[in-house]
Length: 420
Image (cartoon, rainbow, N blue to C red; front, side):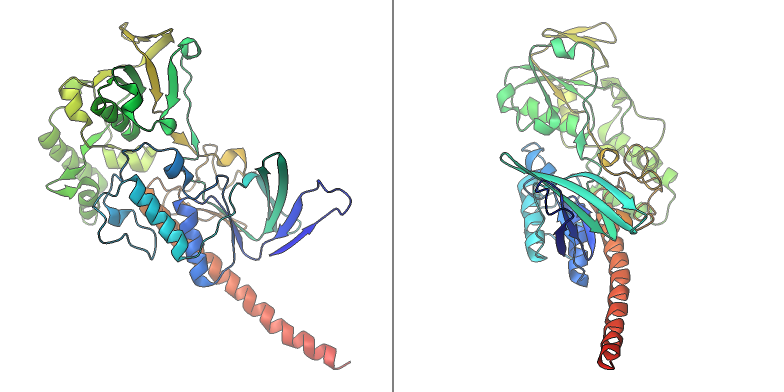
């Protein structure tokens, strides 16, 4: 890695770094998996991370009771299984420990506190120019990395989604996003409005119930709720098994029938199912079904109230679209996350405006001119691992070919010099 500056006179000029390998943006599970694959192939790289730790979403923006919703064998990164003593569904601390062990095992050392401001392909030098900024106290430094390959590994959940709700600014009480929610301990006895009914909304609502809060969960649209396990097996594992022989539409019908047998008719509780099956909906729109881990029981017992969409919020009050008014003390916005790629990557051919590759899975991992995407499959950690394996192998193949050609040229050059 060669470092230099274009200006010796202006000490504020960005420092330029030539990277003899790819630049990976994001040190979450996807970025770590790509880095590990490259490390095994002997390919140098630079791994950039805007936070001060790996997997910052998991470490800093998840609630305390979080566990993996899928069995651990579907969540492990390449070439590194979970410890045998881990439970079927590892908790937050165990998963973070696993990622730390992964980084240590492959000697992955990200460059922390370095935020990518822009990345653009330079046709003139046929390289990517990645500009970053890092702040240490009052000192701000800028670096421009120049590389042949750029791996976008910032993932599907880089930025939280903040909804526009009429009157929210006049509420007066506590309003937090689920990314800042840790535990229901501070909400005991309070009326809490949870906006969103995905996996986060359901689990936050369950946690609030377990801490003697009084949550109301906003369900604006239809949602698939599946049992976490069917006949003692993960619903996901069962679905993957059936998909080996059956089409998606038939697997969806079987899953919904089994769900009805286990959970009963959930529409009477205000949870209307979509007309499209859970797997087809996930494949076509990226909407993940909710895996129930106890929230439905709280709904049945009326400890958790399901309410329709919000019309407006006022001081200490929410008015719903059905005209009902509820007194509330706090609001938790379980409104999800989004990709941040459009904010910094100056490219429109491979990535769409929503920050996801235009090509559907399994073809969304590789673009043109050395551009790659890891962790945008909408298929969780198993999809990220599949991306990482293909990316590291693809880059290593070209890198080794280039290295071989360079080695072949060096002796010839030396022989020519020795003849003079």
